[in-house]
Length: 503
Image (tube, rainbow, N blue to C red):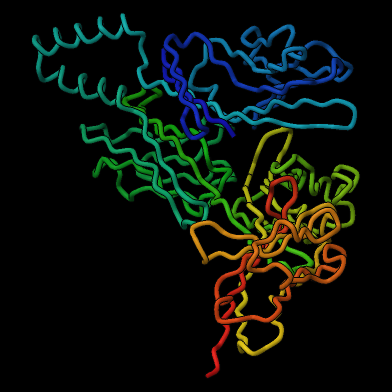
């Protein structure tokens, strides 16, 4: 996911995705989406999470015409030759605070449907244009000179409106998170404090007025999850505590203190709830593995759960929609190989189990929960093939010793099996190589010539063990077995050999 932050007059591309872009002059912002090589009949729709209708922009006309949200009328555009150039980026004119949110670029053709998500964060850090800001500052200085008492309150209010943005980051497994908002200047006793969320979906979060907290006015998504100080007007601490933060809580929050709708102060808080990436190490004898994802957030029953693999090549692994699995949506190699628990959205356990696993299943997986093209939850899981270690002891009078290695997974028949010695010198030396269906004896080191053999057809049988003939104390050390294909190591195993001397 890409994150774009826009301050009034400034565009910043946050460097969490390997690039920094800074543009001055915030008259428009570009939401990036680049997909080369698309067919001419590709349908492209930009939508926004939490809006109805959710359509922000659609490229050209096609049968499934969607109504554009009125908030974006006349403010969006795409390149006329987007499908030719592959640049599906959306230009949004006059970005403002309420434009903050999650945008999805959906492109589809034939039976293929893909999405790219961009998070836009617009922050009115300076609520005035630079020239007007200068004028206001001069006026404030004049007011201070004429009436210090009155001006001090005005100045405090002014600077509070400038310094209004805080960034808060928390992991989903934390029990609570605090959104800070402190105001030390005196306030009337009959003010109202409202916490609201403006992006990605507008919601009433918490309300305090008449010395009471009003739960009835808040959105049900936050029911029994928010808390403020008992007497915030006395302490000046209007911070909000949010219990059990989840991915869906990420967004832009505004604390507004007003009297009779006259705003006395505001503060903007950016909350990012991170779902920790996870690594799953799968052993060479495992016949299945599970990609875990348990979330705290309440998810709508009509949401869609999509497990995809992004590396080494993109694939759809599993789709759960309309209360049931959708095998026709997954890639062919995963047909009948995946399984989720019943009612995953209700149980909040979105884990998927992949059966009959093998080398092809390694890579990066992403689970995304969507509704109307908007992301409600997401997690990245890295699947790795775990390296195994074995220790072998042998007497130096033994005729042979076997370095064991058995793999139950299906192996590619065009792979290469290589055994190397690791601790003899700075560089490993070849002990034995099996490639193109035969042993490559000419590639092994002279010290092992005529002293090694493997079982016939090791890639089919899965027995990749190496037999070492007439072992001696000099053979003691570390041996690394590896299965390689196209320069990529699919499996490996380390074996420590200790040859005991007898006198």
